[in-house]
Amino acid sequence: MGQMFILGIMKYCSQCGDPVMHRVPEGDNRPRYVCGSCETIHYQNPRVVAGCLVHAADRVLLCRRSIAPRAGYWTLPAGFMENGETTAQGALRETREEANANAEILHLYTLFSLPHISQIYMFYRARLLDEDFFPGEETLETRLFRESEIPWDKLAFPVVTETLRHFFADLPADEFPVRTQDIIIDRSRDPIR
Image (cartoon, rainbow, N blue to C red):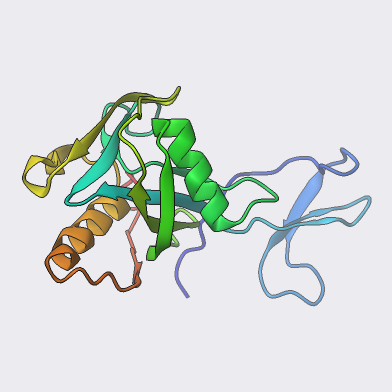
C-alpha cells in the first residue's frame, strides 16, 4: 500500500489536553491519534491549496515569494483554504493577499494530488480585471510574464510549472480543459517538495 505521510506528531488532545495514542480506532482501518481519556479521534486529512492562474491575454501573473518554503522563487498566487470559504473564494482571496490583484474566476483549470505531502492543489483560470496589482505581505515582487519570459528554472513548485505548461499549450487554440494529475515523489530520494 505505500508509505503514509503523517502531517505531524500529536502528543495531546485538543479537546481535553490529555495525552493521545497512535492506534487504529474501532471500526477504522488505519492509525489515528486517539485520546485515552475523552476518546476523541483526531483525523489528519489532506490540506487544500487554492489559487489562480491569472492572465491578461498571453501574459500570466506571477508572484516572487518572500516566505519559506522556496523564498525568492516565483509562483502563482495560492495558499491554504480557510474554513467557511469555497475553493473559488479561497483562490481569489489568495490572489488579493499575495498580489493585490483584481481577477474574475473563469473556471477550474488544474487539480493536483500530492500524496507525499498530503495536499491537494486547485488552480482556477482567472481573467485579470486591471493592471493595478502590487506585492502583498508574503510577496517580494509581482509581474506579468509572456511564455518566453517565464523564469522556468526559478519556479517554486512542480504544480506551478505544470499549470503554466498546460496554459501556454492550450492558449493557441483558446481551449482550456480541466486537467488533473497525481504528482508522486519518493521522499526517500527527494526530500524537497
